Length: 619
Image (cartoon, rainbow, N blue to C red):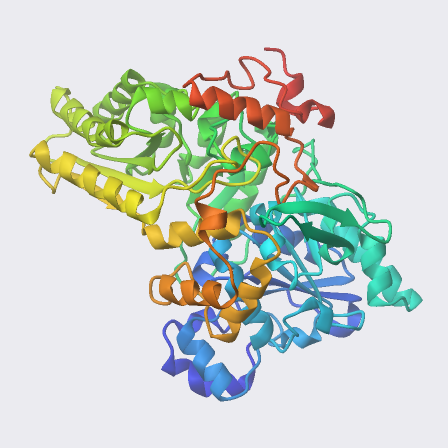
């Protein structure tokens, strides 16, 4: 429960329900009965953090151990932070109300590069020294995992341990090691050296980085027995992998307020821009029976009447229709609706539509990513225009009137003709609606075109590619707008949204950054910069001032093409994907050549070494 002294300040802030705890399903333990206290910190607001599946899984997993008490901590919004700093109230956990200084582990999930400054701000607000070198005793171990841990170099001065890959096993192994070291009176340095021997654990303080005269990395040398390469952890059997049968139910409305069921990990597709599709390989599916059992338990225990079947590409589940039919055997009579996010255009069918529209009908979302077929081939999307149009026709005939289409601009090899083709595709989808004879009567269609800016990411075939400059991205954004206007389409029927180029530029800087950026991160924190993913707080000019003062050229990270033989900041981290495979895929992109998905043919990406999953299915 929240500290009593904050009660009088709650009415001064927006959404006080973010800060009080006491939710149904939270875990309360006697702190004197546990050996390890773990503060699971989400570096964004309560509404976003409570929607994240990873925190739901690990919170329940840790708390099933009688010797661990895991509690939740979220970044306070700027109004609440002002009250806390004004009245000397440290950042606290929702379950106990205790400050971060009472915890053995302070753990962060790294979902987005622009949350990095929030990590520093939360440590500072919780009374924890921001720099890892200023933390000396065997407590306050700051750990982090998640997708951005694949290149954690911009924040290595602040984090003691990074977890690479699936966290369910490696996290507990490190906590168990900590218990032993605490019992045996070992030092912090001894614990970190021992932790580095656990597969999937990266201790950045045990690696020395040197640079060439041109600013590129010369070498990364491990010390004190740390491995030369840290390999990600992979859980191959998803049926035996832990999954909670209950969630903490939020006090206030959150972004995704529903039950969530993970149906498989990984992706077979190999879209060349998509980091998640490579980081989470190989594909490992849960069985229908396990999915059914866990879904039903979640709905019974939480009372949710909607289940989101989560994966990177839900229609790629090999038995998607039988799975939906089995779930609907109880979902229909219990008035529970099923949703399939991340549907692919070429995986949508009448059978799927019939199963997901049974209780509630909302809009459908697809991601063609590029307007022209040539560019879709270059990025290996393997989606064709006639598939999209036919899919939209099926949806319109099934009673849907709203379709959202997601695109990227600034993709490698893109031309202005490719950009204009986004508007063409939107117009064709709209025309398809009016060509359907049995479309919904008395309703107007709405097609939304959303264009984000391409950000080159580590462990993708495009990790060497430059990001377009902000001026070029803005020009492309306006070109789409002009192309839509030239077709005289009603703005009430086709909506065009695009992302801010400034934040995409900063994301690209951090995504491919090295340890030199730690200096800039610290200075930004000292200047009060946080919530960079929120327009209320973000200022690119403030960041440019920080970079200038630190002698850093951000374009060196965002807008520079790298040579294939350059040592990259993350080359000492191993996510299973070989560099040779990524190079081959990049070269195929230049020629607009597609590659088969994992179930059509193996491209030797390196995942066979894990000994299971899609790599060993019969094709």
